Amino acid sequence: MSKDKIQEAKECMDKAAKYLKLSLLKWVPDYDSAADEYMKAATCFRVGKSYKESKECLMKASENYLQNGSLFHAAKCMDQAIIMAKEIGDTSDVFKLAMKASHYYQQHGSSGSASLLLNKAADILQPSDPDSAVKLLKEASNISGTEDSIGQAMEYTHKVARLLVKLNRYEEAENELKRQFDLVTEGGPTSNMGRVAVELFLLQLAKDDYVAAKKVLQEYGMQYCEQAEVYMLDSIINAYSDHDCAQIKKMLNSPFIKHMDVEFAILAKNLADKWIVEPKEQVTNIENEETEAASTDFGGKLC
Image (cartoon, rainbow, N blue to C red; front, side, top):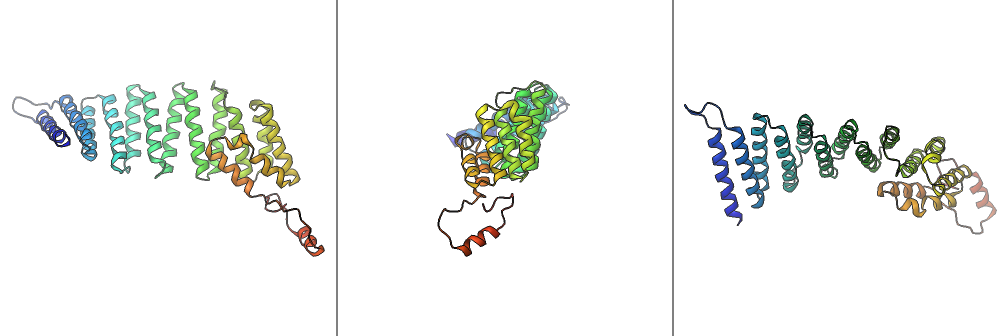
């Protein structure tokens, strides 16, 4: 079966070459027919599990569609070539292909296809090249925002924030979460914004900015969070003020936070682990004196 498909693919490539060949009676290449044959060859190679050859044919098909001005079909070929790149384990040109294809989709007027492609390419690149994945997702969000798909833009923006938290780039993640609130003012949905407010609150704590965390509660928490969430955030602020290690650990390990997106749940766990609860046991006067002399700054290493 595989050998038959590969042979069929080669025959399609030969036909494509003939469509491009010029003669005394044929002055202009038949780009459209050549592109179709390359597409057939790519399909045959894919079925025959020759993914590298399939990708090469898809790129040739894309080039011929471009020659014929068929932007959507050219972009679609690049879209499929990205999948083949994933199959062969060579994602070095995925970023470039995704940006090019999204540009052609937009020129054709298919912005939805452009943002979906960028999101798919970002998923492929995230394990090996998270920086490029962030760029692709930001572009997807920008495209959705300008095309009145604000809800979709918010989804991509939140995905960027989660990835940035995973990379410990808290300042950038904070900007992305705040952008979600900006998009709400432009008509975006508010259904999950209470959770986003909690995430923004946790980021401030991760930056050891207690004042900013309190401001998040006042500015966003009171508006978007449920009463139980407001109580939780307020309790965390009070526990930080009192250097109450046990209460801080308890609140940061609450079921609500544990069931947040995994990146923020891990962030909260790491914050809780910074606070060491001293065991309640009898100590000598000397040990008491040493404990009183120990530093108990806001950073929260000893309480």
